[in-house]
Length: 498
Image (tube, rainbow, N blue to C red; front, side, top):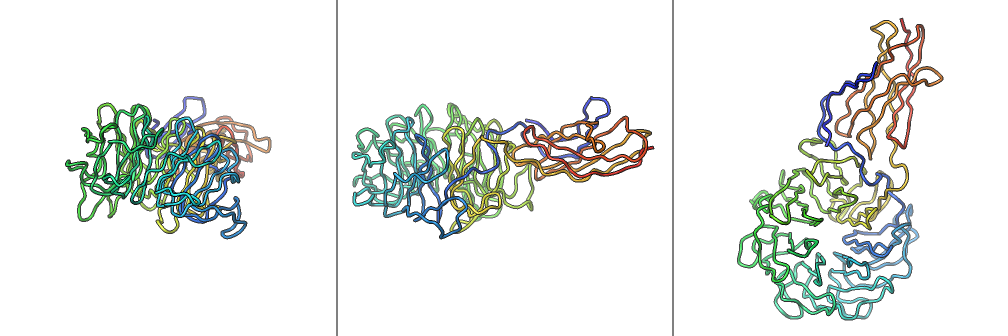
C-alpha cells in the first residue's frame, strides 16, 4: 500500500511537490476500467454465474438486446434467464428456457458442468420446478433429479462439498420445515438434515472453500435459539451456530439503523461481507474475517449500500453506490458504483469505472461474477461510463485500458538563471493511480524532466518538474503523461528564459 503525500525524487533537476492526499493502493489492478462489449437486458439482473465459456444471467428481464441498441430496439425474448458468450458478450442462442418467475441467484458447479438457479419461478417451460432448477451446461437441458419443492422465494445459492445450500424467504422444502435456509445433495437432489432455522430472510450464503463452515447473511435475529443479527457462521453438516466474533462488525439494529448482509465471498482463509444499511450513516461497508479463528481482519465503513463482492486476480471488486469513504473520498463527490479493494486491508485500489442507478432499487450494481480473468456486473443501471448499457456489463484484462486525462497547460516560472519550473495539476486515469509525467521542451519535444505522482478522483495534487539547463530566450514547454500503455500530451506554454 502506498500513501499519497509529498515526495521528492533524487534525480538531478527533478522535484515533485504533492499536496496531502488520502491513502490508496497504487499498484495496477487486474482489469481495465473500459467495459467490454456485452448484450443488455430490459430490466434488472439479479443473478450471475460463469461456466464453460458462457455467462448465465438471471433477473427481472423479459428481453435482451445487442450492445448499443436503444431500449426496446432489436430485442430478443428471454424470460428471466439467458446465456451469453463469455469472450464476446454475445447472446447464446442455443440456451432458451422460459421461466414463469424472477431469477434471484445463479451458481455454477466447481467443474462448470452445471448451473443452479433459484428464484420465484414454479415452472421451467412446462416442467414443474419450485424455485430451484439445475441445467447441464454442455446441453442446456434441465437436470432431472434436482427438483426440491421450495415453498417460497429462493434468494441465494452456494455450493460446498456435495451440498447445494440455499436461503431466502421460505418455510418448507418438500413439505418439511426449513425456515429460510436448507440444503440438498447435488447428486441425488435429496433434502439434507442441515437446518440453521432462521427467523427472517436470508439474503446471502456461502461455504468456506473446504466446506468446513457456512456463512449466512440477511435480516434474521436468531439462528436456531441463539440471538444473532444479520450474519452468522454455522456447521456445514447440521446448521448449528458456530462462534464468530467478527459478527460484531455489523451493528445491532436500532430504530434509526438496520444494517444487513447482502453478499458473502469466501476465498482461501478469508471471508468477505457486503453490508447495506437503512438510515443515515448506517453501516453500508465491507469487512473481512479469518475463517479459521472467526476474528475480524478489517472493516471499511464507506457509506452507500454494498450489494456485490467478487474476487478477481487477487483483488476484491465491489458493487455499491458509495458516496463517502473515510480515509478516501468525502461526501459530495457523487456516487461511485464500482470500486476495487485490497483484500489485505480494504484500501481502495486503482479502478474507477462507474454506472448509474435506475428503478426499481436505485442502487446500481446488484450482483457480480467472474470466469477467472473477467468481471461481469449486473443490476439496475442504464449507463456504464456514461454510455448506454442496461442491466449487464463486463470488464476484462484485454487492451490498453483507460487513457489518462490530457494534462492542462503547465504554469512556468524562471526564478533561477537557465532554470524553468513547470507546475501542473496531476491527471486522472480510471485504472491507474500512479502516472509518469514528462516535461517536454520545444517543437522537438525534448524530454528534460521526468517524475511519477499519484492521483485519484478525490485528490489531484500538483506536480512540478524542472528543466535545469534551459536555453536562453523564448521557450515552449508541454506536459506528457503516461500510464505505461497510453500516452497523452497537453498544449504548450511559453516563457522567456533569462
